[in-house]
Every structure is written in structure tokens, then in C-alpha cells.
Length: 150
Ligand code: NI
Image 1 (cartoon, rainbow, N blue to C red):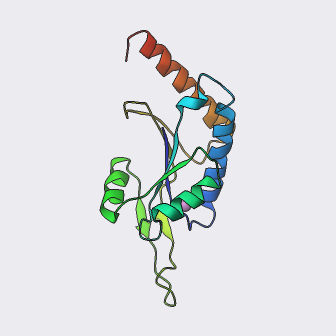
Image 2 (cartoon, protein in one colour):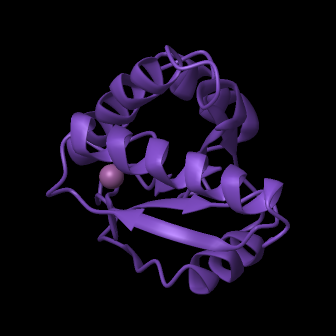
Image 3 (cartoon, helix red, strand yellow):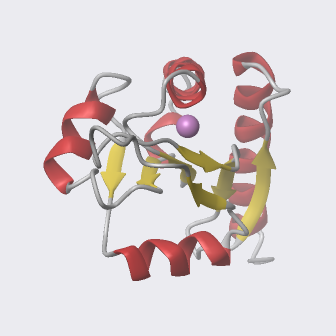
């Protein structure tokens, strides 16, 4: 799993990062032994506006393999805490209470099939660098599994 926390109204950072991840997915999907086993997941940090339909419509624009998740405010704050993701809702516009920004940490997390943390990737890495790291992790994990180390 590759997890990313963001929100659909994000003006520039989330679109850039999700665009980058979509290039990563395209790259790893060319490798038969890696691509199919990696699932990219987007989790909203703004469950108030990002209902399942909004999230689904948004995320499929980046790559059809992306899955989007939302939940209650409580569920989202719990999972964000687990991954040490910072979420801070900004000031609401005086004219429109649905108009606000959400400040959030920007990371991709790579998790193994047992939900164990493998790696994280920040904004400093480009699509080629992330793809290479994911490919190495997946191959190493499979090798370890085949040899009984996992
Ligand atoms: Ni964002």
C-alpha cells in the first residue's frame, strides 16, 4: 500500500503530489512482478467536505488505480495520529463556511501487506526516485517472504 493524506480542495500541493504518484504508478505498472501488488490509497484530512463521492470523483482523475478513503472526523483524526500526520483546519471564510484550507503534512507511506511500515517519501523526491525505492522494497519483501524471513 502507498498511503497519502490530503484533501480534494487543496489548491496546489495535493494535485502536484498526486500527479507525481500517478507517474510512479505508471512506472511500476510496467513491471509485472511489482505493479499489480501495489495499491495507492488517498485518505482525506477533510472529511467534512470530502464525502465518499467527492473523494472518488477527485482521485480517479489522477490514476484509475487510486482508491480514496474518508470517514468520520474521529476516524480520520485517529488514523492521522497513527501516521503522525499533522492536520490543521484554517480560518473559515466569513462569506462561506464551506470555504477554508487545511494545512497538513505531505508524505507518502509505503506499507507491507501485513500493514507494517516500510518507508516514507517526502516532497523532495521525484517520481523516478520514489518508483525506484518502491520497486526495491517490493522485490526485497518478496525475496524475504520466499526465504521464510517474513
Ligand atoms: Ni494538500
